[in-house]
Image (cartoon, rainbow, N blue to C red):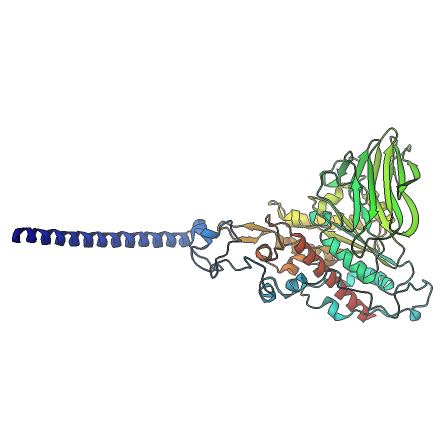
Length: 526
């Protein structure tokens, strides 16, 4: 018994010693692993080429966590998530801290929270020949643009536009203020321009939807506050792709061609507060040797037939007056040959504002030079806008080989060329939205060239006598695209190049308020 007991004790003691030895070995291995990890981390800080492997850099909430967040910006890890709004919709305070007070203030603001109440004594049109001292004073309540942090830069270059807007605000008979806004996909989708149009027309009067292309074709093109349909046989030739040797693309930068049997229809809106009435239609088209006929229908009844055949290529316009109210305008091609059409304008007698949304999918500013200069000058002279807006820069930011000196020269040439047909027309350069990419650590950052593009646009604007709206700074400046993407509601798309519909609405409101403040300051100087 005694031997057996001693044997058991001896085995038990051996087990304890063995376990202790394994524990000590495990601790040594763990310590060695920690030392190796720390050494590897130190090397990543010592060698710039290994920066993506650094466990933490300034701006990140906690070490290592970003490894679990790569490509999962919306995951919710309270206390560790990268600065931004995640999960459900945030409070007004959170939005203000993250997006800035000006952006946050627009999110809950009704889209049409403006009125004609500032015009005294009556919104009824005033005869155009009334002396100036008999006209109502125009008053802008500072509350209408309260809270904005980004104003129109160089607003003194908008004197003609503001003067015309004053006449419109005074309700002078037939006083129509027209804006021609060219841009890339954010304008082609009538995103920013929709909000600007709605607000300006609600505030100063609705003088019609303005210009719209014959068909969208395969483009991401569309307009709000109008019912627009077309058949599928139109061949849409865009200056973005430089498809026409002669460069006759029309006012909207896209020529529509079709044989017999194709149609396009344009009808006033049935919903909302604006776009519900029209008193004249105008077709922009081209006459040429192989032209066919275009039949015009109003409210379903055939009214006219236009023969577009002519011995020489030349631009032409067809007007049609109707009673002010809801109407439809439909065109259908017929006969042999081809129709070459540019677009249709819907307008009403003033006073009011017309805001032409002239977007070109995938465009850079230089693409406007693909149009024949004299042709484009004549188109702009005929349309006679009071303000020309050029909203480009987003697609330029994606050009890795963009040279800023060359870009400045090209943009200068674009501005000069677009103003040739109407030298007295005011001009505004609308800067690009923030554009983002993911760095080696998976963090969303502003594309490096974008701030330099903004600086070049401001310099060109000043040199050419144009105003400037810095949309990049209006969004919040550097890396704002990350905050917009991570906010709730989400304001930027996952491609980090475009805004969401809500985001575009925010930009439109900020732009409108900046215009309104510039107008108020103009009135104060009178």
